[in-house]
Image (cartoon, rainbow, N blue to C red):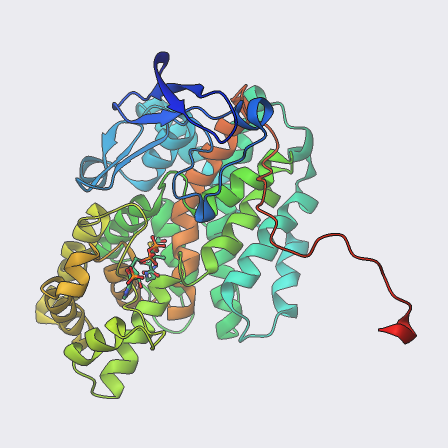
Amino acid sequence: MEINKEFAKLSLPNQEPMTLPVITDTMGGRSIDIRSLRKDTGFITYDPGFVNTGSCTSSICYIDGEQGVLRYRGYDIEDLVEHCDFVEVAYLLVKGELPNVKERKRYADLLNNESLLHYDMQTFFRQYPAEAHPMSILAAMSVSLSAFYPEMDDIDPEAQIDFAVTRLISKIRTITAFTYRHMKGEDFVNPSYKYSYCENFLNMMFKSPVIEYVIDPLHVKALNQLLILHADHEQNCSTTAVRLIGSAEANLYASVSAGICALWGPKHGGANQAVIEMLHQAHIEKQSVKEMVEMAKDKRNPYLLMGFGHRVYKTFDPRAKIAKSLCKAVITRNGHSDPLLDMAMELEEVALSDDYFKERNLYPNVDFYTGLIFRTLGIPTNMFTCMFAIGRLPGWIAHWLEWKKDPYQKIGRPRQVYDGPQGRTVKTISER
Ligand code: ACO
């Protein structure tokens, strides 16, 4: 990062023009450093949705939204999906480098050692209504970990971090599987040292005492790839939530719990559930994809094409491309088909040739095809966003840790443009 080689000049009413340093990042992107703006001029900036605001420097994830490039720690997402499993990518995000054989083994051992859930926490599940949304349980259980493993509050980052991180990455998977078993009214299946991270998850979800459950290697591969696709995406809504909560020096579990809540929203990670619901609804009502596209274009109608559009990508989301080919491989194996996949592909084709979508650069995002894969793995629709959360967790942790080490960070606290009444005087209640 280079600072102070260039300057931007800002003309302000009734003030001398101000020069502001320009920061050039390692990929050549340029930002205006406004840190002294309010102190020097009294002005603040107005930027709803932080569309133009860089809140931090970060070396975890790089996105080029115009070219459709996504990299974790400098590696292309396509390369990582092809050559790594989720545990290696989690290690990469959190620690900055891919693990060697010894480091990989140690991490896998830690994940295994940390995979059980405290017995008293297991009793919590029974108190939730079976129809509770799994994201509400996941968020509550994540923050509850701080009650059961409180040493996180005064963690020594260097000595303890691997334990804390693997504990969280391991337990979130156990919590998600237990949530599913509770929804089904079935006994929990504990994790086993015999299985890899993704095998363990599938086994905890689907092992049955009455029907033999054989872990499908294609499902394991698909799950690894899906989790990698979701593992980080720089300063998105949930990661920003994690950083913001972390900036108040709340513990890692509490910060991650906030990220889970943010992810739940249908404009963010909740979109994968919304996509399937949209396709399912259209299938039942025998809506054509042309009708769906017309509804999405109608500004009087709140209907949107879920799984389309992205704040950063103005071309194909690279994750959507990978998810689409994975989706086809998983669904069409052995000559199987899924009418919702056929509908999704037709919808993509029709929308991408429509002027409304072309003019606004609206392309399928990561959520458009991933739900169809989760569905084929047997994961219920209302748990898709939990799957997203398992994948995103290493990214959240990496950002939380990065924030802690960043000497320029402060507690997050934006300003506002006040739009309310000026000073008023309270009348007595009888006068109002
Ligand atoms: N269907 C129809 N129109 C859309 C869609 C869509 N899915 N997405 C955006 N538009 C339109 C908007 O109405 C707007 O039109 P206008 O310029 O005529 O007013 C224009 O495209 C720009 O959209 P914005 O909402 O301003 O873009 P923003 O960057 O704020 O929002 C978002 C991005 C939230 C992803 C939006 O595209 C959306 O709601 N998509 C559907 C939900 C979704 O798939 N979310 C998952 C995102 S990926 C993720 O978080 C993991």
